[in-house]
Image (spheres, rainbow, N blue to C red):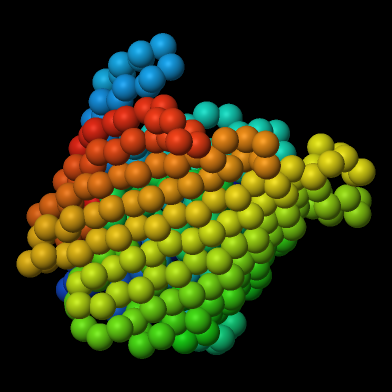
Length: 346
């Protein structure tokens, strides 16, 4: 039923937009149609990511050759009635990564990755979003995977998709001070950040070069079912991004605490990561990544070290990303891998 309602809403918005519009194409790198009065807009985006990976796992001497459709998305966005009322629908055709633990499951459609209405009352100061969206936690979670420096997943970060159904108040991105507060189906989420010198804080590549720019932020999460006072899950973290003269780095740290039930012993987990990249002639970018996480105090320290080379044929629209690296549990390696990911995005 939820899928049908969402698709019906999508079709209605498309119909209204097209009835009001006398097809005008915007002259930029986006596919958009805008009405003459500017009050209606519909735009289209899409992406495909194909990942070919060979890995060797030490336990059992297991060799694997995987050809995976990492991401296949189609996205419709725009605004209706007024430029301040925007909408977005994103459909994902790739296979799910696997079932989340029960307490991490998100309400809503898995096919519809995102669907929301966003009202900008004061664009730089106050906006309201209702629907399904990426929760405002870490920068690496908010950074769309096709704008990252190498293959999509951040191994150290929270394994859930970061999407949930709810309501969020925020002030957008790229302002000197940015903030967001969200009440979603699994709890309360908040984020507060500072951006210096106009940095684009959610694209991992420094396309334009120039002087020092950076962004820093802190975030937190409290898990609740809104029916009891039992808070059994907590998360907190900090992240950064810095750019200068085509060099870019981003990273973060997170801590999480979970309990089986009220009065039970807490389980604390931590993780951190760092990405580095240097863009050469707007085409080639050597990259490196280090990730670490520990699920609990008595669990091993897990590390992943990756190096790669990205080739940008047309920026993020068409790129090839080669990588290789190793995973370790404490000081003993458990797996090594090499691969190449190809992306087409419009």
